[in-house]
Picture 1 (tube, helix red, strand yellow):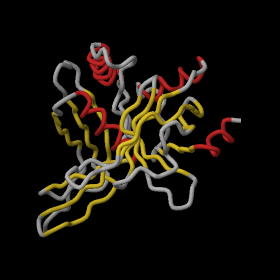
Picture 2: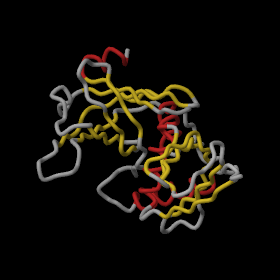
Picture 3: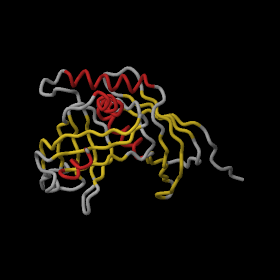
Length: 238
């Protein structure tokens, strides 16, 4: 009689080309609550995973734990594992990766503050508005992708902007204005995107913004930032 799959801990080592790639993929996966991986072996629901994430220039590894939440068969002998992620409990690895990004960013004289490729889904309370994704973040501003080829007409350069994110340390609310916008082209695989310059922030806001940039006070997934523009942004700023 054939026995079913046994539950055990599985370790996987994943190497990224850059520290930025590591943080981008980590925050995207943790933010949506998990990751999907393909496997040639059937793995039992409840199996524990430990992902060892490595990047150049950083000796420490980032360890992320996960548990198989469900398994589906994509083809004969091929399976898709849906793994529920947990944010890193040990700060040593992720702190080293973020410090590496800061060190490289500080050498870039074109930028006042280093940016970290934090990936957070974002939405707007406006009928017909597209979905957005924050793709990098710094004390000075934020870069945002539009899920589409065109930046919405109401997201014009100079338009007031407000971003709100609920963190474990409390609500974060940051204001600014649209600084630039670029539409996609037929020859480009890149999404439309725009950038925002933050206004003068209070010390309390800077502290909470740093909580998000350094991944120190992450909310429970799914992570969703709420955006507002123009009059809507001004009204919510109070």
